[in-house]
Length: 324
Image 1 (spheres, rainbow, N blue to C red):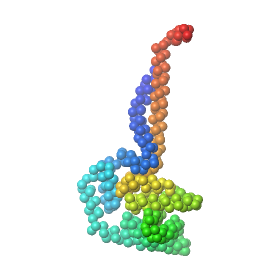
Image 2: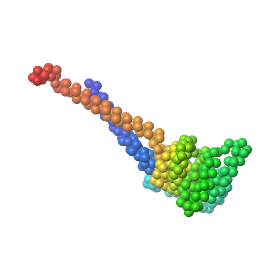
Image 3: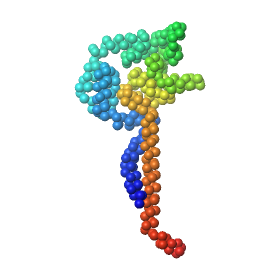
Image 4: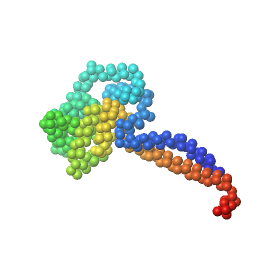
């Protein structure tokens, strides 16, 4: 009579497996909706304690932009933020405290392309917008080639393309601004080595196959990410992107999360807009649910057959057969 203990164990296991299987199904159903996907995964991570710790760490590191993003995400999710942390953030954002530092880093980014922080990124982007940044980077990479130093081919190619995009931006009365901003984001990532190799290969294959327009559309989407979530979030997202096609998911994430996008990327990384590693865990729970349910059905069938045999002994079955 092992059936009853086995059945009891399977039913007990179902109480543990089924909720996780349900969550796994939700994750798979949200795979193409980065806003919903990130929200589902934040449900179990973004607690009041987690938000408080991350905001505190960002403020301790004098990273007001990241702290602001975590506060924005906390407010969106109705997670309470202590008043003292809000006061610290307000103080960190005070113009009197940031003016000189931001001006200095903006100027460095504009003049040299160095992007150590958000101000530097904006300075580099401003330089690109008027064409100066592309000329500067082309000249630098040209000098590297002449002197035998390593040439950043991606940066050189993007700078050359950027000059054409800048001209188009002015001639189109600003219609090409998202594309121009997207090129600046990719340049910032290429300059600092924060662009994934798989993304570069994906873009290279598209260009080689005559689909440069597809890459241009993705760059325009990346510019939209910059507009909705900020330059730093766009660069952070690009670092997690493995193909040109995934830029559209990053755009939908930025549309859903807005200024909280940087905090979401800091918390979830690539899993914020693509299942990635979470997919394997989710798939395992789904398989576990189906196997468990299958075994329960098998156990019920065997148990029922055993019950019938006890209720109807062999001589009764023989009598029925003779009567028939």
